[in-house]
Image (cartoon, rainbow, N blue to C red; front, side):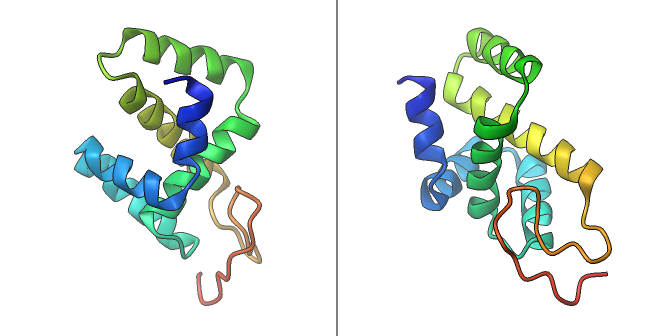
Length: 116
C-alpha cells in the first residue's frame, strides 16, 4: 500500500478508530482519548484529524522522520500512524486549549464551551 493511500484511509474516523485500537498501545490510546476529549472528539476522530493535519502541515524534517520510521518498521502502517499521532499530540501539547480558543489545531469548528 502506498503512503498516500494509507493517509487517505486514516483520514476517515471509522478507519482511524479501528487502526488506533489495533495498535494495542494503551498509553498512546489514552493520550489520544484525552486530547480528543479536549476538543469534543472521539479517539477515532482525533486520530483521523491528526493524520490529516500531518499530511497538510508537517515540515520536511517531520516527513523525513516519518519515512525513516516506516523504513525500519516491521509494520509500516503501524509506524506511520504512531508517528503521526505523536506529532499531533506534541503539537497540541504546545498549543493547548487557550483562553477563548474554540478550535483545535485541525481548523475544524468544535464547541469547547465550559472548558477552563
